[in-house]
Length: 361
Image 1 (tube, one colour):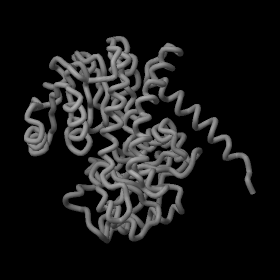
Image 2 (tube, one colour):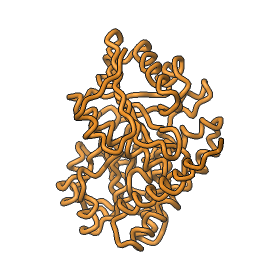
Image 3 (cartoon, helix red, strand yellow):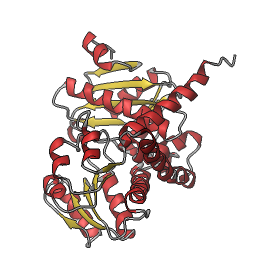
Image 4 (cartoon, helix red, strand yellow):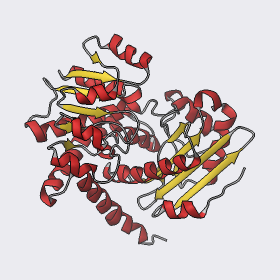
């Protein structure tokens, strides 16, 4: 096992504190852990297991995701910094107990600077394997005292953010009578669909995995399904909820989108800098992704206190007020909500992080 980095990574990492490469040929483990900031506390963020086409793509993803976690944790009011990890490979083919335990030993070697959790391609059962070699694991199964599936409160938080956006646009915190398009109805999207249906919304859904789409259709017969995201965004929507992979809001999508609100669970939704301005110019209210999708990290962070679902749910309910605060600052500062969210998060990292410089002996 070894750790290494290259000069190119130093340039790309920019403001990141630490980037660690982990390699264990015997198990096939190739992992990257990126710690963006520990100003507010140890870095917390999930481990993504994904078949990246290149190491460069994996580096780009882990750096973007870890930075988002710093902002997400700060805005959620947590005393935690931002980090993320990726394991390169197809989890269906490569994942094994030995690989996960090898990965756990690497995380343990960081001495608590990084706490891991579930993400795309990893589940609570995987965290239990990692925890056999590592003390810094959240998102474990209920049987092992953990929070279990963090997608439950992620979806709940997105719904609270969507309610706040509805209040901003239509004057009422409800999606009743509105048409909401959900792209990606796997872990989080399926729970979000349930909240929307219960609130009286008309839901249109799509997913690249046909069995997942069929399961949602079986569970919620009133939901209309379409074959692609392109078809979904081109239709008549009041709200668009991207709940799959990042980069969902491209120039092409923004050009055809009829929705007045974008609010979804996907991370890093803006395909490039400037998209937030394009959304604003078209009169589309964007609820910043890391603001509204923080319910999951609130849920797993609660494990550090001894997990209580009721307490975590109460904290996730606060996403409604946080989203309202983002919209209010956006109005006050005459900036898009994405920039307002960054300012609120940076303010907390600066103001509270400064206190860590007060030596307690």
